[in-house]
Image (cartoon, rainbow, N blue to C red; front, side):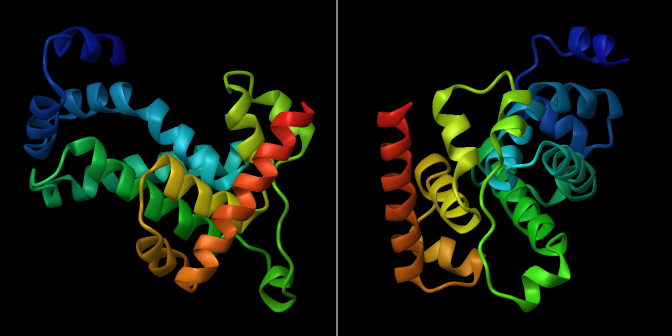
Amino acid sequence: MLVDAQNAFADDTLDELVLRTQQGDHVAFAALYEQCHRRVYALCLRLLADQAHAEDACQEVFVQLWHKISQFNGQSRFTTWLHSVTSNIAISYLRKHKNWLQKVVSFENSGMDEAGIALCGDLNGLDKLILRLPERARLVFVLHAVEGYRHEEIATMLSMAVGSSKSQYHRAKKLLQEWYEND
C-alpha cells in the first residue's frame, strides 16, 4: 500500500497531502508518513539518544499526527508544526520513561555509548557526537542549534531556568568541540 501511496501522490505537494489527510484520506497519510518519517525519527534519535526509544517516539508522533492533524491550521509551515509536535512528544516520552531511581537520585544520564552509536550507520559525524552528549546538554543543543528554539522556549519545555538552558548549550558546544578535535 505504501508504494501505491507514493505513486498516487508523487506529484502532490506536502500541503495537499496534509489537506487530504485532514479529510481522512488514509492513502494521503501514508504518503505523508513516507515523506516525513525519516526527519521525525532523526529528531527523536537526537533528543532521546536511544534507537528503540526513538522508534517508539516516532511511532507515537504519527499516531498523534493522525489524531491531531485537524489542529494544524496552516499559520506556519507543516514541517515546522510537525517538528514542534515531535519535540514535545520526544520530551514527554523521555520524562515518562526515566526510571524511578533517576527521579529520586539526581544524576545526569550520559549519552549513547559507542556500541549504540555504531549501530546507527546512517548518522554523520556531528550526529554521532550529539548522541554522546549528556541528556540535558543534548536536549538543549538539539532544540536550540538544530531546531531553532529560543532559550526561553527551551526553558519552558524542559522546566529549567533560562540561564540553565544557556549554560547547557555552552557545555554541549564545548564537549562537541573537544570530541571533534580529538576524533
